[in-house]
Image 1: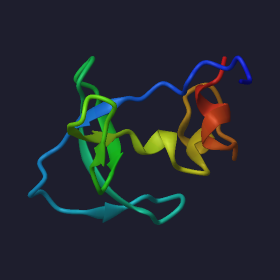
Image 2: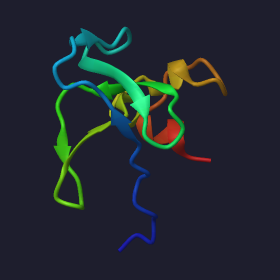
Image 3: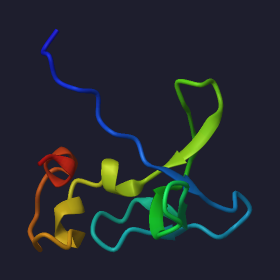
Length: 87
């Protein structure tokens, strides 16, 4: 084991019947929704994933986008997704 904490998963509430658009950085398909925690607008990966609880969830696209750091308020640069969320 590496001793690293598992990556944080941000659940996004989306309308599964809503339209699919593309990420402007990596062109991956995304849906827009609001985070379950704060209600802030957030892009989500277009396809749901079965979570640890056995239910389907849409997760923040910032977790999978290779250019997530470009959209960070902390800095506009190309960084891997994990670099975006790390302290």
